[in-house]
Length: 146
Image 1 (cartoon, one colour):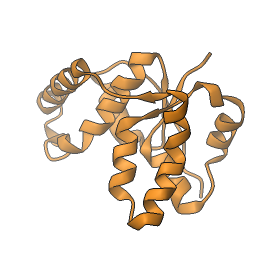
Image 2: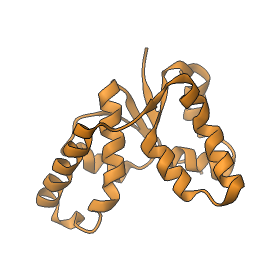
Image 3: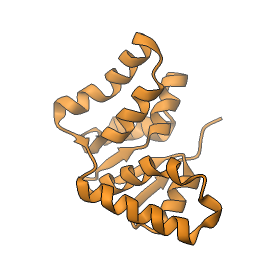
């Protein structure tokens, strides 16, 4: 079975618009047993939630995955590897020095997905393509709908 991990940006789009991108609707319709939820994504979504209603909306997204045991969390080794990747990016891409802290969560998402053999789905092409310069993982980039 194919395993999938959706990045935060796709859930934010859903929370803002009330509808998923067509490709994500299809993924949820046909690939539901293979979808996993990242604890990093949960943290990012909760950090952006405003008030009780916002938190409830976020909880509605991830709670079914908690109940099904399909939450993916970075391991201690993932944190160490993320540090190595960030260090390599600082050396290789001096133009990214100020952006390095922003990449931490995306690196952890990519590493967590790789741990379980999942493909990361995102519309955040810039950050994940940068990470792919150092880290090998499966990625599907989705163009944002107008």
